[in-house]
Image 1 (cartoon, one colour):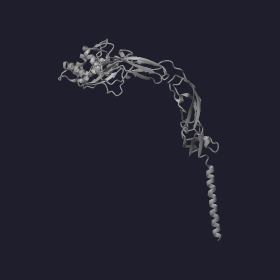
Image 2 (cartoon, helix red, strand yellow):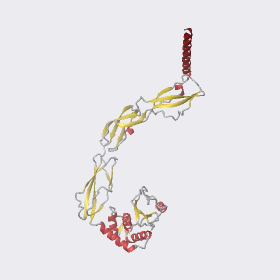
Image 3 (cartoon, helix red, strand yellow):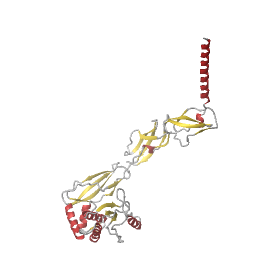
Image 4 (spheres, helix red, strand yellow):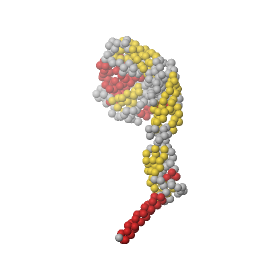
Length: 397
C-alpha cells in the first residue's frame, strides 16, 4: 500500500514538472503568433514582440507587402538566430472617404462617377457608382449622390453638384455627300453621313425620303434633320441620283474592254499591266465622281471616261476581278483628302496598285511597301499612302 502511494506521488510530481516546463517554454517564446491591422496600415516588427528587442527583424519583405490585401497572411520574423512563422490578419472595417468634385458639363457629355469625387482615401481599392443615374441632357443644377465602396464592401456617400450648361448650338453636318444608286436598289441613306455636335452627346439623325422614287431614274432630294440632346436641330438636303444601270450592263462593257487588251497567252502580271495602262490612257481625272458603289463608279469610267481617284480605284478593281486577279481595296487614313487604291497579287506576292495619275507622273503599278512609304514621305504631310494594315496580307517590302 505504501509503495502504491509513493508511485502515485511520483507520477503526480512528474506531471507537475511537465506542466511547469511547457509553461516556461510558452512564456519563453518572445513573440505573438498573430497580429491584426486595418487595411492600409503599416505593420512594425515591434507589433509581434512581447518586449523590446534590438535583434528582431522581418524575414518576409514587408516593404513590398500589399497592406490592402484582406485576409490572413503568413509572415516570417527572426529573433536572434531563430525564425518564427506568424500570422498577419488584414481587416477593413472603416468606410472610404472622399470629397465632392463639383463639375460643369455640356448637355449630353457623360461623366463617370469617379470623375465627380476627389481625394478618395481607403486602405483598399475603392469603386465609385451613382446612387441614381444623373440626367446629363437636362440643363441646370443637379445634386448627385456618389457611393464609395471598398474591397470589404464598406460604403459611404458623397454629395456632388453637377451643373449642365444650356446648349443653343445645333449639330453640324461634316459630311453629307450626294448619293448615287441604281434603279431598284435598297438605300442606306445614313451611310457616309457624318454629324457632330459641340456637346459630344448622341445626335439623332432623321431622313425624309418621301420624294425619292427608287423605281424610276431621276435626281431626287432627301432631307436630313440632325437633333442634339438639347433639342437643337439642323437640316441638310442631299441629292439622291437614281440611274437605270444594271450590273450586267457594266460587266458587258468591262468584258468588251478586257477582250481588246488581254488574251489567254498572257500571265497575270501582263494582264494587270494591260489593265493599268488602259485605265491611265482611257480615263481622265476630275475632282468629283460617284463614290456610292464600285459598279456605278466603274460605269462612269467606262461610259464617260472620267472620274476622281475613287473612279480609278473602282474600274481597276472591277477589271482586275473580271480578269481573275486577286485584289483588295485600301483607303487613306488621315490627311486632308480621301484617296483610294488597291493591292494585287499576280502570283509574286502582294503589291500596291494605283492607276490614279499624279502631277509628278508617279508610277503606281505594283509598288512595294517601301516604295509607297518613300512616295508618302516625298509628298509631305498628305498621308498619301497611309492606311490601316489590320487584316491585310503581308505586302512585299
